[in-house]
Length: 382
Image (cartoon, rainbow, N blue to C red; front, side, top):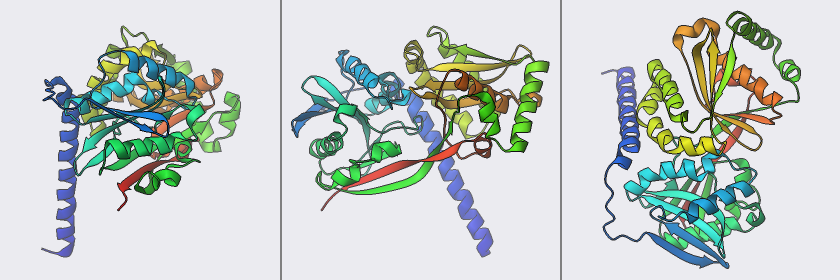
Protein backbone atom coordinates (compact mmCIF):
# COMPACT_ATOMS: atom_id res chain seq x y z
CA UNK A 1 0.00 0.00 0.00
CA UNK A 2 1.36 3.42 -0.94
CA UNK A 3 1.95 6.09 1.67
CA UNK A 4 -0.89 8.19 0.23
CA UNK A 5 -3.34 5.28 0.28
CA UNK A 6 -2.34 4.39 3.84
CA UNK A 7 -2.88 8.00 4.96
CA UNK A 8 -6.27 8.06 3.24
CA UNK A 9 -7.28 4.83 4.99
CA UNK A 10 -6.32 6.27 8.38
CA UNK A 11 -8.39 9.37 7.64
CA UNK A 12 -11.42 7.24 6.75
CA UNK A 13 -11.02 5.14 9.91
CA UNK A 14 -10.81 8.31 12.00
CA UNK A 15 -13.92 9.76 10.36
CA UNK A 16 -15.86 6.52 10.92
CA UNK A 17 -14.81 6.44 14.56
CA UNK A 18 -15.87 10.07 15.11
CA UNK A 19 -19.28 9.38 13.54
CA UNK A 20 -19.74 6.34 15.79
CA UNK A 21 -18.88 8.39 18.87
CA UNK A 22 -21.27 11.16 17.77
CA UNK A 23 -24.13 8.67 17.31
CA UNK A 24 -23.41 7.15 20.73
CA UNK A 25 -23.37 10.56 22.41
CA UNK A 26 -26.63 11.71 20.81
CA UNK A 27 -28.34 8.42 21.69
CA UNK A 28 -27.11 8.56 25.28
CA UNK A 29 -28.29 12.14 25.73
CA UNK A 30 -31.77 11.22 24.46
CA UNK A 31 -32.28 7.73 25.90
CA UNK A 32 -30.56 7.66 29.29
CA UNK A 33 -32.92 10.15 31.02
CA UNK A 34 -35.83 7.88 30.11
CA UNK A 35 -34.34 4.90 31.94
CA UNK A 36 -35.04 4.24 35.63
CA UNK A 37 -32.50 5.75 37.99
CA UNK A 38 -31.35 3.72 41.00
CA UNK A 39 -29.72 5.64 43.81
CA UNK A 40 -27.89 2.64 45.36
CA UNK A 41 -27.42 4.60 48.58
CA UNK A 42 -24.88 7.06 47.15
CA UNK A 43 -24.38 10.49 48.68
CA UNK A 44 -26.67 13.09 47.16
CA UNK A 45 -25.12 16.25 48.63
CA UNK A 46 -21.87 17.43 50.18
CA UNK A 47 -20.81 20.84 51.38
CA UNK A 48 -17.80 22.72 52.74
CA UNK A 49 -17.12 26.14 54.25
CA UNK A 50 -14.61 28.10 52.14
CA UNK A 51 -13.51 31.63 53.10
CA UNK A 52 -16.73 32.17 55.04
CA UNK A 53 -19.00 30.98 52.21
CA UNK A 54 -20.75 27.62 51.80
CA UNK A 55 -19.90 25.54 48.74
CA UNK A 56 -22.40 22.79 48.04
CA UNK A 57 -22.19 19.89 45.59
CA UNK A 58 -25.46 18.17 44.68
CA UNK A 59 -25.30 14.74 43.01
CA UNK A 60 -29.06 14.79 42.31
CA UNK A 61 -31.51 17.60 41.67
CA UNK A 62 -33.05 18.62 45.05
CA UNK A 63 -36.66 17.55 45.40
CA UNK A 64 -37.82 20.86 46.93
CA UNK A 65 -38.21 23.97 44.79
CA UNK A 66 -35.91 26.22 46.81
CA UNK A 67 -32.90 25.77 44.52
CA UNK A 68 -34.83 26.67 41.36
CA UNK A 69 -36.34 29.72 43.05
CA UNK A 70 -32.96 30.92 44.35
CA UNK A 71 -31.40 30.25 40.93
CA UNK A 72 -34.07 32.35 39.23
CA UNK A 73 -33.42 35.17 41.67
CA UNK A 74 -29.66 34.96 40.98
CA UNK A 75 -30.29 34.97 37.22
CA UNK A 76 -32.15 38.26 37.55
CA UNK A 77 -29.16 39.86 39.34
CA UNK A 78 -26.62 38.97 36.63
CA UNK A 79 -26.70 41.31 33.58
CA UNK A 80 -24.56 38.91 31.51
CA UNK A 81 -26.80 35.89 32.16
CA UNK A 82 -28.12 34.03 29.12
CA UNK A 83 -30.87 31.40 28.87
CA UNK A 84 -28.02 28.84 28.82
CA UNK A 85 -27.51 29.76 32.49
CA UNK A 86 -31.16 29.42 33.48
CA UNK A 87 -32.42 26.59 35.72
CA UNK A 88 -34.90 25.42 33.04
CA UNK A 89 -32.14 24.99 30.43
CA UNK A 90 -29.62 23.43 32.80
CA UNK A 91 -32.04 21.10 34.57
CA UNK A 92 -32.94 19.48 31.25
CA UNK A 93 -29.23 18.93 30.53
CA UNK A 94 -28.44 17.69 34.03
CA UNK A 95 -31.20 15.06 33.77
CA UNK A 96 -28.84 12.97 31.66
CA UNK A 97 -25.86 13.19 33.99
CA UNK A 98 -28.14 12.66 37.00
CA UNK A 99 -29.56 9.47 35.46
CA UNK A 100 -26.02 8.25 34.79
CA UNK A 101 -24.90 9.21 38.34
CA UNK A 102 -22.48 11.79 36.87
CA UNK A 103 -24.17 15.00 38.05
CA UNK A 104 -22.11 17.36 40.21
CA UNK A 105 -23.92 20.67 40.61
CA UNK A 106 -21.74 23.15 42.51
CA UNK A 107 -23.43 26.11 44.20
CA UNK A 108 -22.09 28.82 46.51
CA UNK A 109 -24.11 30.45 49.31
CA UNK A 110 -23.57 33.46 51.53
CA UNK A 111 -25.79 32.45 54.40
CA UNK A 112 -29.08 31.53 52.72
CA UNK A 113 -28.44 33.57 49.57
CA UNK A 114 -27.33 31.74 46.42
CA UNK A 115 -24.45 33.67 44.83
CA UNK A 116 -22.97 31.27 42.23
CA UNK A 117 -23.87 28.20 40.18
CA UNK A 118 -21.52 25.92 38.24
CA UNK A 119 -23.02 22.71 36.72
CA UNK A 120 -20.43 19.95 36.18
CA UNK A 121 -20.50 16.21 35.56
CA UNK A 122 -18.11 13.34 36.19
CA UNK A 123 -16.18 11.86 33.27
CA UNK A 124 -13.77 8.97 32.89
CA UNK A 125 -10.24 9.54 34.15
CA UNK A 126 -11.31 11.32 37.35
CA UNK A 127 -12.42 14.40 35.45
CA UNK A 128 -15.14 16.93 36.19
CA UNK A 129 -16.33 18.64 33.03
CA UNK A 130 -18.83 21.34 32.09
CA UNK A 131 -22.24 19.85 31.48
CA UNK A 132 -24.06 20.45 28.20
CA UNK A 133 -21.37 21.67 25.79
CA UNK A 134 -23.21 20.14 22.80
CA UNK A 135 -26.24 22.33 23.50
CA UNK A 136 -24.83 25.39 25.26
CA UNK A 137 -22.38 27.91 23.84
CA UNK A 138 -21.84 29.69 27.16
CA UNK A 139 -21.03 27.67 30.26
CA UNK A 140 -19.21 30.13 32.50
CA UNK A 141 -20.35 30.13 36.13
CA UNK A 142 -23.37 32.25 36.99
CA UNK A 143 -21.95 34.62 39.62
CA UNK A 144 -23.63 37.44 41.53
CA UNK A 145 -21.87 40.69 40.46
CA UNK A 146 -21.54 41.71 44.11
CA UNK A 147 -19.29 38.69 44.70
CA UNK A 148 -17.32 38.66 41.45
CA UNK A 149 -14.07 39.67 43.19
CA UNK A 150 -13.88 36.65 45.48
CA UNK A 151 -16.13 33.96 43.99
CA UNK A 152 -13.67 32.26 41.62
CA UNK A 153 -11.24 31.43 44.48
CA UNK A 154 -14.13 30.04 46.52
CA UNK A 155 -15.46 27.95 43.63
CA UNK A 156 -12.07 26.41 42.86
CA UNK A 157 -11.23 25.74 46.50
CA UNK A 158 -14.68 24.22 47.00
CA UNK A 159 -14.28 21.90 44.02
CA UNK A 160 -10.85 20.87 45.31
CA UNK A 161 -12.30 20.04 48.74
CA UNK A 162 -15.46 18.27 47.60
CA UNK A 163 -13.90 16.44 44.62
CA UNK A 164 -10.31 15.81 45.75
CA UNK A 165 -7.90 14.46 43.19
CA UNK A 166 -10.10 15.28 40.20
CA UNK A 167 -9.11 17.38 37.22
CA UNK A 168 -11.60 19.98 36.04
CA UNK A 169 -12.33 21.03 32.45
CA UNK A 170 -14.41 24.18 32.10
CA UNK A 171 -15.64 24.74 28.55
CA UNK A 172 -17.16 27.65 26.61
CA UNK A 173 -16.16 30.46 28.97
CA UNK A 174 -16.51 34.02 27.71
CA UNK A 175 -13.72 36.58 28.00
CA UNK A 176 -15.37 38.47 30.85
CA UNK A 177 -15.61 35.25 32.88
CA UNK A 178 -11.82 34.96 32.66
CA UNK A 179 -11.11 38.63 33.43
CA UNK A 180 -9.67 39.99 36.65
CA UNK A 181 -9.73 38.36 39.09
CA UNK A 182 -9.08 35.53 36.63
CA UNK A 183 -9.26 31.82 37.41
CA UNK A 184 -5.58 31.64 36.45
CA UNK A 185 -4.71 34.07 39.23
CA UNK A 186 -6.33 31.97 41.95
CA UNK A 187 -5.88 28.42 40.64
CA UNK A 188 -2.56 27.93 42.41
CA UNK A 189 -3.97 28.88 45.83
CA UNK A 190 -6.77 26.37 45.24
CA UNK A 191 -4.26 23.60 44.51
CA UNK A 192 -4.61 23.47 40.70
CA UNK A 193 -2.30 23.94 37.76
CA UNK A 194 -4.27 25.72 35.02
CA UNK A 195 -4.03 25.75 31.23
CA UNK A 196 -6.14 28.32 29.34
CA UNK A 197 -6.87 27.60 25.65
CA UNK A 198 -9.02 29.50 23.14
CA UNK A 199 -9.85 26.83 20.56
CA UNK A 200 -13.32 28.09 19.66
CA UNK A 201 -15.06 31.40 19.08
CA UNK A 202 -18.57 32.77 18.79
CA UNK A 203 -19.63 35.41 16.29
CA UNK A 204 -21.65 38.50 17.15
CA UNK A 205 -23.01 41.49 15.29
CA UNK A 206 -22.88 44.84 17.11
CA UNK A 207 -26.15 46.51 16.15
CA UNK A 208 -26.16 50.25 15.33
CA UNK A 209 -29.03 52.62 16.00
CA UNK A 210 -30.76 52.35 12.62
CA UNK A 211 -31.26 49.85 9.79
CA UNK A 212 -29.70 52.30 7.32
CA UNK A 213 -26.58 52.53 9.47
CA UNK A 214 -26.34 48.77 9.50
CA UNK A 215 -26.67 48.54 5.72
CA UNK A 216 -24.02 51.24 5.38
CA UNK A 217 -21.57 49.13 7.39
CA UNK A 218 -21.67 46.28 4.86
CA UNK A 219 -19.53 45.75 1.80
CA UNK A 220 -21.21 47.42 -1.19
CA UNK A 221 -21.78 44.12 -3.00
CA UNK A 222 -23.21 42.44 0.12
CA UNK A 223 -25.44 45.44 0.78
CA UNK A 224 -26.81 45.37 -2.77
CA UNK A 225 -27.47 41.61 -2.66
CA UNK A 226 -29.12 41.77 0.76
CA UNK A 227 -31.45 44.56 -0.28
CA UNK A 228 -32.30 42.73 -3.52
CA UNK A 229 -33.17 39.48 -1.76
CA UNK A 230 -35.23 41.20 0.92
CA UNK A 231 -37.11 43.27 -1.66
CA UNK A 232 -37.95 40.15 -3.66
CA UNK A 233 -39.11 38.25 -0.58
CA UNK A 234 -41.17 41.09 0.87
CA UNK A 235 -42.66 42.64 -2.25
CA UNK A 236 -43.16 39.51 -4.37
CA UNK A 237 -43.48 36.81 -1.72
CA UNK A 238 -45.18 38.89 1.03
CA UNK A 239 -42.46 37.74 3.47
CA UNK A 240 -43.14 38.33 7.15
CA UNK A 241 -41.83 37.25 10.54
CA UNK A 242 -44.04 35.40 13.00
CA UNK A 243 -42.97 35.11 16.64
CA UNK A 244 -44.05 31.96 18.50
CA UNK A 245 -43.68 32.15 22.28
CA UNK A 246 -46.85 30.55 23.65
CA UNK A 247 -45.73 28.02 26.30
CA UNK A 248 -48.63 25.71 25.37
CA UNK A 249 -47.65 25.42 21.70
CA UNK A 250 -43.91 26.17 21.63
CA UNK A 251 -42.81 22.52 21.82
CA UNK A 252 -44.85 21.58 18.74
CA UNK A 253 -43.65 24.66 16.85
CA UNK A 254 -40.02 23.78 17.57
CA UNK A 255 -40.64 20.14 16.67
CA UNK A 256 -41.87 21.29 13.26
CA UNK A 257 -38.61 23.17 12.77
CA UNK A 258 -36.58 20.13 13.78
CA UNK A 259 -38.30 18.21 11.00
CA UNK A 260 -36.83 20.71 8.54
CA UNK A 261 -33.38 20.15 10.05
CA UNK A 262 -33.72 16.37 9.75
CA UNK A 263 -34.85 16.69 6.14
CA UNK A 264 -31.67 18.64 5.31
CA UNK A 265 -29.44 15.81 6.61
CA UNK A 266 -25.91 16.09 8.04
CA UNK A 267 -24.62 16.07 11.62
CA UNK A 268 -27.22 18.61 12.71
CA UNK A 269 -29.93 16.21 11.55
CA UNK A 270 -28.67 13.57 14.00
CA UNK A 271 -28.88 16.07 16.84
CA UNK A 272 -32.38 17.06 15.73
CA UNK A 273 -33.36 13.40 15.96
CA UNK A 274 -31.66 12.28 19.16
CA UNK A 275 -30.76 15.31 21.25
CA UNK A 276 -32.79 18.46 20.58
CA UNK A 277 -36.37 17.10 20.98
CA UNK A 278 -35.89 15.74 24.49
CA UNK A 279 -34.13 18.88 25.67
CA UNK A 280 -36.80 21.26 24.41
CA UNK A 281 -39.70 19.06 25.46
CA UNK A 282 -38.42 19.50 29.02
CA UNK A 283 -37.24 23.11 28.90
CA UNK A 284 -39.15 25.04 26.21
CA UNK A 285 -42.44 25.73 28.08
CA UNK A 286 -40.63 27.23 31.07
CA UNK A 287 -38.21 29.17 28.89
CA UNK A 288 -41.02 30.59 26.77
CA UNK A 289 -43.08 31.51 29.84
CA UNK A 290 -40.11 33.48 31.26
CA UNK A 291 -39.43 35.27 27.96
CA UNK A 292 -36.18 33.40 27.33
CA UNK A 293 -37.23 31.50 24.21
CA UNK A 294 -38.86 32.65 20.98
CA UNK A 295 -39.26 30.75 17.72
CA UNK A 296 -39.34 33.05 14.70
CA UNK A 297 -40.92 31.73 11.51
CA UNK A 298 -40.29 33.30 8.13
CA UNK A 299 -43.45 33.06 6.08
CA UNK A 300 -43.21 33.53 2.30
CA UNK A 301 -46.33 33.17 0.17
CA UNK A 302 -47.98 31.97 3.43
CA UNK A 303 -45.56 29.03 3.51
CA UNK A 304 -43.18 28.27 6.40
CA UNK A 305 -39.91 28.97 4.58
CA UNK A 306 -37.48 29.09 7.51
CA UNK A 307 -37.32 29.07 11.30
CA UNK A 308 -34.99 30.32 14.01
CA UNK A 309 -34.84 29.39 17.70
CA UNK A 310 -33.85 32.56 19.56
CA UNK A 311 -32.86 33.07 23.19
CA UNK A 312 -33.45 36.66 24.36
CA UNK A 313 -30.87 38.25 26.69
CA UNK A 314 -30.43 41.61 28.38
CA UNK A 315 -28.62 43.06 25.32
CA UNK A 316 -30.36 41.37 22.42
CA UNK A 317 -30.95 37.88 21.12
CA UNK A 318 -28.97 34.69 20.73
CA UNK A 319 -29.63 32.90 17.45
CA UNK A 320 -29.44 29.31 18.66
CA UNK A 321 -30.41 27.27 15.60
CA UNK A 322 -32.03 27.68 12.22
CA UNK A 323 -33.53 25.64 9.39
CA UNK A 324 -35.14 26.35 6.05
CA UNK A 325 -37.32 24.50 3.59
CA UNK A 326 -35.13 23.52 0.60
CA UNK A 327 -38.18 23.74 -1.67
CA UNK A 328 -38.22 27.49 -0.94
CA UNK A 329 -34.58 27.93 -1.90
CA UNK A 330 -35.39 30.37 -4.72
CA UNK A 331 -36.38 32.95 -2.08
CA UNK A 332 -33.01 32.78 -0.23
CA UNK A 333 -34.96 32.13 2.99
CA UNK A 334 -31.91 31.69 5.24
CA UNK A 335 -30.28 35.03 4.52
CA UNK A 336 -33.64 36.82 4.41
CA UNK A 337 -34.50 35.45 7.85
CA UNK A 338 -31.17 36.62 9.30
CA UNK A 339 -31.62 40.07 7.76
CA UNK A 340 -35.16 40.42 9.07
CA UNK A 341 -34.02 39.42 12.56
CA UNK A 342 -31.21 41.98 12.42
CA UNK A 343 -33.68 44.67 11.38
CA UNK A 344 -36.14 43.56 14.07
CA UNK A 345 -33.41 43.72 16.71
CA UNK A 346 -32.42 47.24 15.69
CA UNK A 347 -36.06 48.34 15.85
CA UNK A 348 -36.31 46.86 19.36
CA UNK A 349 -33.20 48.75 20.52
CA UNK A 350 -31.04 45.66 20.90
CA UNK A 351 -27.28 46.15 21.19
CA UNK A 352 -26.10 42.84 19.80
CA UNK A 353 -27.11 39.80 17.79
CA UNK A 354 -25.24 36.70 18.90
CA UNK A 355 -24.72 34.05 16.21
CA UNK A 356 -22.79 31.67 18.48
CA UNK A 357 -20.22 29.08 17.40
CA UNK A 358 -19.47 28.17 13.81
CA UNK A 359 -17.15 30.26 11.66
CA UNK A 360 -19.31 30.37 8.53
CA UNK A 361 -18.69 32.85 5.75
CA UNK A 362 -22.27 34.14 5.67
CA UNK A 363 -21.92 35.38 9.25
CA UNK A 364 -18.97 37.58 8.37
CA UNK A 365 -20.73 38.87 5.28
CA UNK A 366 -23.51 40.04 7.62
CA UNK A 367 -20.97 41.92 9.75
CA UNK A 368 -20.25 39.44 12.56
CA UNK A 369 -16.94 39.47 14.44
CA UNK A 370 -15.25 36.67 16.36
CA UNK A 371 -15.17 36.57 20.16
CA UNK A 372 -13.03 33.82 21.73
CA UNK A 373 -14.28 31.11 24.05
CA UNK A 374 -11.94 29.75 26.68
CA UNK A 375 -11.42 26.17 27.80
CA UNK A 376 -9.78 25.96 31.23
CA UNK A 377 -8.08 22.72 32.23
CA UNK A 378 -7.26 22.50 35.93
CA UNK A 379 -5.18 19.61 37.19
CA UNK A 380 -4.39 18.94 40.86
CA UNK A 381 -0.97 20.34 41.60
CA UNK A 382 1.65 17.87 42.78
